[in-house]
Amino acid sequence: MSEQQDVIAELGDVGLLAGARWAYLSATARALETYSEADGHDTALLGSIRYTLFRDRLDRVFACERYAVRSGNNDADLDLLYDQLSERDIDTMPLLDAGLVRRANLNGSPGWAHGERRFLLASCDFGKLDRLPWPQKSPTKQRVARQRTPEPPQPSLFEDLELEELGGLEMLATELDLDLATYVVAHSLDPLSGQIELVFGRARLNSGGGQAWYWRHDILGTPLPGGGRRTDDAPLPTGPNTVPDAPVRLRRPAEERRENRASGEG
View 1 (cartoon, rainbow, N blue to C red):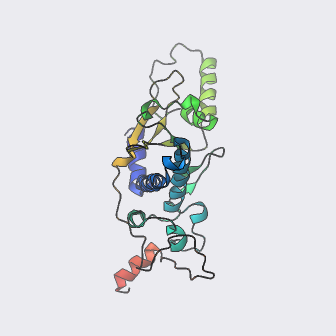
View 2 (view 1 turned 180 degrees about the vertical axis):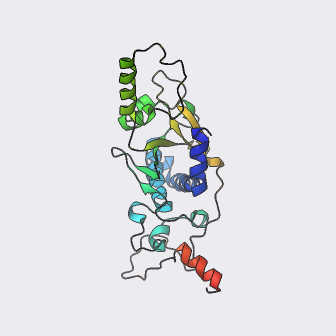
View 3 (view 1 turned 90 degrees about the vertical axis):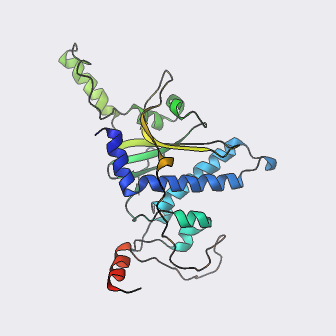
């Protein structure tokens, strides 16, 4: 099995790819609602809003940062989790266990990790994902693109090198390794048509131009599972909650819900 097959199978099975897809669909829909050329907005502002919302939605669906579960309950406070989300966002948000994904920033660049695999975010002009210019990105993204791949090298690559030279190359390759195998979720948006792109892949440092990926996977092809976050029909917040001492509604852990269903309880 290739690295791509292994990684995509693992992250697809646990729901990480579905969570990323939901987060980007929610972020772009909200960004386009906010964006207005008539109000003086430009594509730079749209890109900033999109990135900020994408990061926020990833933290929500993965229960990270301010949405982290701190009470020991597997479910977060609904008022905080759902604040500013649309009905569609709430209905389609994947129900993932807290702790499945953790924040794993790299040199200040926001990152999320499952097990020993981490991903960072990178934006791109629409339609140019395959030529994404990593040398023009931050030093952190360039370092990610320099990682050595787990694929075995060609047998004849170092045949004529002395042992000392081989040792030097091995040391150089080791220095390129990161604390976690790090991938990139790259995203783009056409503000005129509303078309989007979203991929997960292993970046390739294309110093002379050319292909930007060793491999990449289209996340938009990942189906969204049914939601399940909503537990009652109480009105959801439409803005900041200014009511003091509002009761906090917590969702029961998934294991407890399954036990109750098995015993015939509510």
